[in-house]
Image (cartoon, rainbow, N blue to C red; front, side):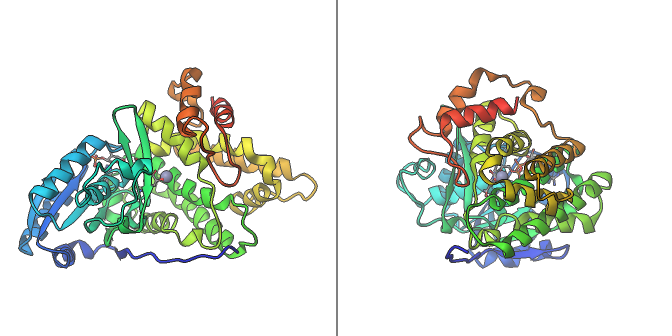
Length: 389
Ligand code: NZQ
Ligand code: ZN
């Protein structure tokens, strides 16, 4: 097991009762806040009206910035930074999914920074302080509600880049599984896919031995695989959403990284797809991840076979680990297809015309490799896009 330091500072308020406490919770951080949200979903569901009421009842002054799009854009982040500076904002409150939360984190880091917030996403600067961020999560998926990460798209050059910093952990997150009842099937599938990928990115590691965290990851994957068809069949199933929502947070709050180094190539390869074609992160992962698996399989057949047996129940065969490993990948693809994902680029109308460009962007013109399990260069990434066709 690798040495590690683990601390996740986000206070989680889980269940049906905590939305009513939002005014009290938020007022611990000040009296002036920016309420940040996406399109219409939180308005339509009644969540935003409820939040406005709670904040007003607690005597808090609330400025609003809506309109965050999936694959959140840098231009809106700049507007949020200006709003924070002009109005002495003390807390950025994100109501929505990963896109809204990531945009809130960017605003929170950008407001006290004298340079361009994009510096944090290019690695030119490291965020050392940020305004406090709180979240009210409406979709289990990205895990941003208790992660130190933020992913933003710069429109100019279509660059989608991530930053990780301790000051970006939300101070608190309110998770009410009942808020997921309004999710359309495609978003459910995207969320389920992303959660599974956060688990699998961590599973495929060269660190040894990591039996305890292997078992935790396998259990979390199996929980998600069981709950997903149930929420698709019955979107108002509170108990199944509760399993999925908590699994989604645990999948990405760094607990399952302890003592091991994950891979993360599939995420980087996917971010190029979302940046160029504006597809949902989960939809892109359902296509990239199986292709990545097929490409790196032989690096550690035993690990892929273990994954197939323990997660998917493939029958073990000591003499033919490659067949077992490939059966695990086939089960993964079949599962994602069963929840409504496409698993090939050609199914979503993407051809090979920009593979070289995406592979170059992903490796910064081959100045860096991508992934830790198997470090990849641009020619490897192009081959993975081809396998995904
Ligand atoms: O905009 P509205 O109308 O609110 O609709 C949203 C949006 O269209 C809708 N939605 C959310 N909650 C809903 C709902 N619709 C009905 N009922 C509800 N309860 O869902 C759509 C997608 O929302 P989005 O926030 O984009 O989804 P997700 O949570 O999957 O976030 C994706 C973003 O997170 C990034 C991704 O790259 C992507 O940009 N990630 C962030 C990470 C992090 N910060 O740690 C890690 C992840 O790996 C990921 O990269
Ligand atoms: Zn993800």
